[in-house]
Image 1: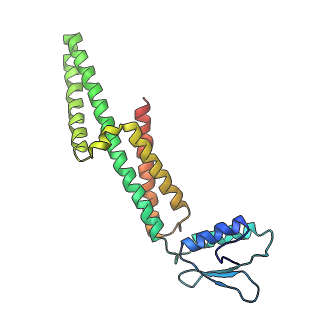
Image 2 (image 1 turned 90 degrees about the vertical axis):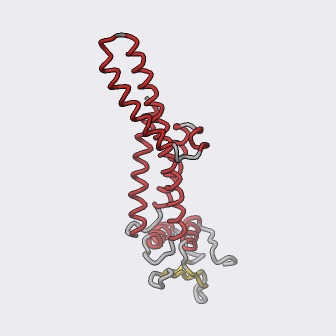
Image 3 (image 1 turned 180 degrees about the horizontal axis):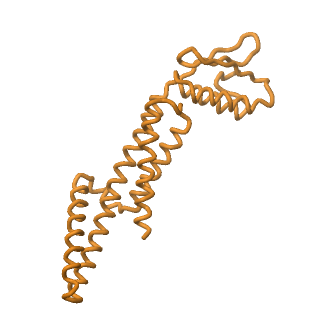
Length: 206
């Protein structure tokens, strides 16, 4: 191979790219050509040949080996997942607070309208107003720690950006070892944020 990390077959190229990304080492095979790959823990290994044909299934199988190897270096992709989840969580929190504030303001406007319609609605209107006032106070408190630029973006846009970060995190985690302790924790966090974004978008669509 002129470039030991290149292969003419797209399936094998994807396998080589994944191995390189996760810290596998390579050396040329002097007897049969091609290259020999070994995981960082020097436990898992396999050879790749340039002349092999109809080996797409083998290439996919080797990606499964790489993905599930507990010795691979996945610190960098996991760090990127956490960055995306942190951004998503921040955006969700801001969007939720903006939505709470909008709902509270609508409820207060509704309560004020009820107060003007009829005296018999006074008790109910006061209850609605008080509940909305409490919700508004909580929303304003949550927004007090949010940068002004995030507040002015609008809840829908923030929710959309959060959804994008969550989607990126899910795609990154999909190719990481499923039994890795940090992977499991980040997957749980990703799912929790995905559910919050979904619930938020339902609220915004009403």
